[in-house]
Image 1 (cartoon, one colour):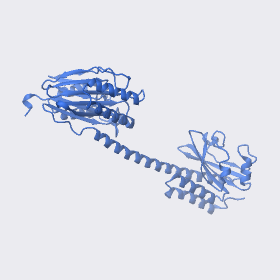
Image 2 (spheres, rainbow, N blue to C red):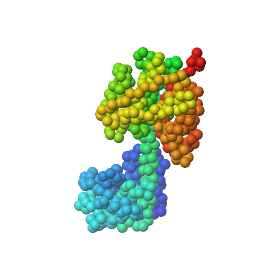
Image 3 (cartoon, one colour):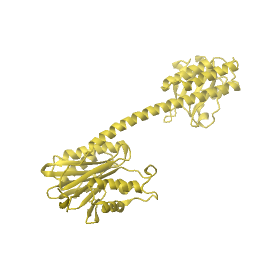
Length: 426
């Protein structure tokens, strides 16, 4: 039996398979069906099949076939380790030709093959990035000694099929990526809406906040909660981790905090309940550093709890004083005993609450900006508005880290509260 008679038929076979690269078989199942159809026709074969390797199970999974019955195809599972694929997996990508399936020790299911009416067998690897990912196999009904030309041609067809499969996978990945990007855009928009567009106007205080996520969405957040009696809740949090998981936990914490803060007067009770909820609903490696304070705008007193958050920085008459955390982060322990502290704002005082994305910013030499770098910026620009001070902090980061894509990246969130001096108030 001669499968290909001459150069014209060989060129026709290559034309068949090269067409796979120009046609828009974007759905992988349709592409694989077309490959086996084209191969069967071009090689005048009795049957053809494609199997792809499942790297998790090690099984050679049938993906498409032509001319073979389901009884034969699904009679037994075929694993990479116990099939001829092991030669391809080892790096030998030469096609395997078997003239007599019934007598070759490398073949399995001899009785089933005889019942199927196939006698000879030729298989070539499907290769992606130098690694075998599957097999393209063809069967002839009678004994056939595959010539060198036939093996080379079949190997070329398998290579072209590999490229087509890779393109289909790439297209699928691009579609999935675009869908993920779209969903992230929606999630980022939702997250932005969860944070205040602007701070409330509460003279004599000038307050501003800003969040700059490292990626589309992040784990940092801030909030202003208007409370009875002219009081203002000030919230800043930093969720462990980044991306979608951190964003989900951020939304949960923000909602829980708002619910508790609007119904419970005691700051310590609010955080105890929020902590319990986070501890019960998260895994041990998930936690939240949180600054929550209530500002009495009439008395100028901030009552707050710093639960593992970066030290707030108080600027008073040119001196910067850190106000370090006195309580552990939220979600670490089942029962939190938060330590409450107070700060009496004097005229001209500036309080900056920043997540560690600022101080941990790395410069060209790999050294972090540090708390002192933030403090120096605050010291130099304490006479500016709260919003302008945050802008100066961003400028400091940009100048210190000229290429943020090649260095440390973290979410950055800042709240600045400034008690204006009497002469500057209208």
